[in-house]
Length: 131
Length: 286
Image (cartoon, rainbow over all chains, first blue to last red; front, side, top):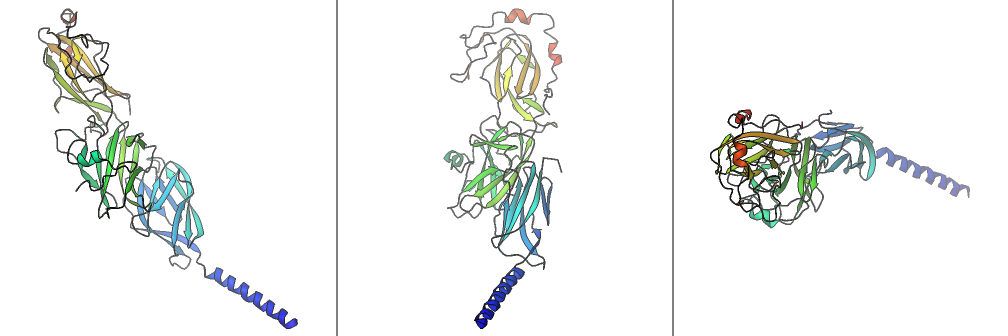
């Protein structure tokens, strides 16, 4: 009984260690990287931790989410928290996203990696000429 | 080639646009999408849009539409596989709205028109269109400044266009309403609203022609010279259209204005045309 109890304890520690190891291996979001942006007739600011864009303006960018080691996070997906204010959609090629301001206001952009929510970044949509 | 895939707003394939790609109603010049995956073509809703003059070479994608203007846009995807469909939508419906299968300029600002593939939801291209305040109206006669002195019995045609504050012509179909300030020296020969209006001057005198759209209007001071003439039946009044009841002669079988000659002989008739500058006044908007 004592021996089996010791085995159970060992198994518990092993499982917990495995879980902790998995959590430790999961990349932790640090920031977004925007590249290959299209031009826009209004003000657009795609920052690592914030998006600001004018109402009606659309811009395409190639987006990567980088973890704290500076490595790209896998299977990036971007979603808006409020499509009445701000929209993000898949662009013409994998890795491309199109951002556009629908109406002035604030929203969030949810960043998913490998199906898990990595972070939510603030988004501001300004009225034309308001940035 | 321009209309391999003319998908109109709502994803409805319009054969009329296919047929019209090189003719009336469609500005076939087009503009490349900002992502380089296709070409956007501007299409006029009707003849009131100066972007698609019937007799001129189709112009390029205008990019600037006057507020209140209606227009259509089609998209031609480069390297399309033939099976994919694209739907056009406005990024900002409060600036460029989708109205009755057309786009409508609502308020000042830019709005991207997005070409979204229906099969996978990807936005494959877009183009920005600017909605601009209509600040003034331009009035021309055969593309030139209109004559300020008309002869009785000689029909005149005036065309109105929406303009910005620096006289740039703005795209978009819109209704223009013409009026004569109660004068019966000249008769409107077509039904309102119309961008192009025909006039029949029947008796000498001075008349103020006003054309308006929305809150903007332009006045034109015209002097009519010559002897009074009989007013023939209206040549081009649309069937079922209601003539302007304030104008004598319209719809009355061609009898001349009863007091036209007497009115024209009043004092001041000879010099009143000087009040007309020939260039329309600025309107109140913007």
